[in-house]
Each structure stands twice: as structure tokens, then as C-alpha cells.
Length: 308
Image 1 (cartoon, rainbow, N blue to C red):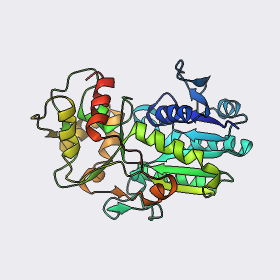
Image 2: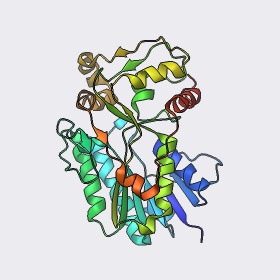
Image 3: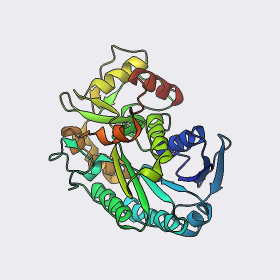
């Protein structure tokens, strides 16, 4: 029997790639967004994740709800994130559906967690991390089957909330410079969105065999020396000799009062000064080899899609 998934945030990065992967895996997919797209084998539903009746109407009869929504530009994060997950929890409970959501490394204190396992203590050191930890707590405490797939920083063809498109390069323009928030010698985890979507689809194919509350970590690309990812961006842009410049963190507070996104990004600085590597052994045990597009190809496809 063909299963049906509702993907909240299907017009964005993690949601969009997961929706497309589920279509490839033979699922019926309903895409939920304020600005639906056309085609791609997705049945689009217009709605707002802050409106419970919208979510419940779109979720009628589904087997899985993928909650992949975030406030754009991190605006009004504290007021929106938890009400949105509560709406998805209510819809999952009403339909007996599995609720799945991408997780972040922000749930940890990077100074204390150089390697994060699915059962590592969550002692977030940031406001955003505390909200993300509470989101997962509410999913675990609810009367629903839940799934978290934790990833490093996303990159891919969607120019949304991610460091590559918002801070390192400029979408729509040739790559003339690369600004890296990292520092040489400090590792950092990256996750290519199509690979994340494929991992989600493989997990949801076997969701009935997963624990009631399942938490997995996606290893992705581990930039061990902190500047390897920027060097790969330069290669993908056809400019292998282009040297990255370090983000001027000390200057950001000057502009932050006038820019919500900057204020939120400043809070993430510790994750660029302390490594947090995700242990993906449980994921591999569940689905086999982790989806892994070669980095140079992933970045070449990303830059092409971002018109760089």
C-alpha cells in the first residue's frame, strides 16, 4: 500500500529535498507552504504552519508528517518555533502519524561536546539551542511516534537559512570572494541537502520498525581543518587559487541592531570556535551506508543552482 507524507516547509531546503526523495521512493507527498510550487509529483496545499486548522486539514489521513519549517531569516524565532511544532504534534496525534523533523547541533554546548552521539546530554549554551532542545523534548513527550535526524550546517540549491548562501558567497553573482566563518584547525560539520532528504526517505521507508522516539545523527561532510570546505567552494567555482577571508566577527555587533539575521548568526560563533562532530553509527546501522554525494560535485551543483 502506498503511504502518504505531509511535508511542512516543502518549498524550502530540508523539506523540499525530503519531499522529492519521498516521491522517488514511491510515496504520495503533500507539500505544505505559504507559496506552493508547481509540479514535481507533489500535491501542494496552501497554508501557514502557525495556523493549526491549516495543518490539520492538510494532514488528514497521512502516515507521516515531516516538520521542516523555520522562520525565514531567523526572524521572530522565539515566538514561532514552538507553536509551530505544537501544531504538527496535534496533527500527528489526530492521524496516528509519525512526526519527523531535522535537528541541529545547536542543542549542545560546543565547548563540552566535541563528538555528539544521539544520546549525548543536551546542555545548550545559546537561546536558539534551548528552543531547539525544547522542541525535541516536546516531540519525545507527546503521544506520537517521532523521528529526529540531526545534521550539521546545510548547503544546497535553496538560498534559505544557511551559512553558504547567506554568509560565504552571494547567490546570483560569480564567486569573486569567499568569506568563511570558521578558523583553521577547528573542524565543522556540513550536510548536503539532497543527501539529507535521501536519508530521511530511507528512514521513513522503515518507520514502523523504528523506536517510538527515534533520534539519528547524519555525519555529512566533516571539514577537519576548518578551511577545507571553503577550499572546495573555490574549486567548484573554477577558482582553486581563491583564498577565503575570515568573517569579521568583531564587526558584526555594529550592524546587528539593524539586522535580525545578523543578531541570530552572532549567537552561533561558538560553533565555529569549537568542533562538534556528529556520530552517525546508529544511522548507518538503520539504513546502511549514509547517502554521500562527492563534495566537489555537491558544491558544483549548488553553485550552479544558486547562479554563481
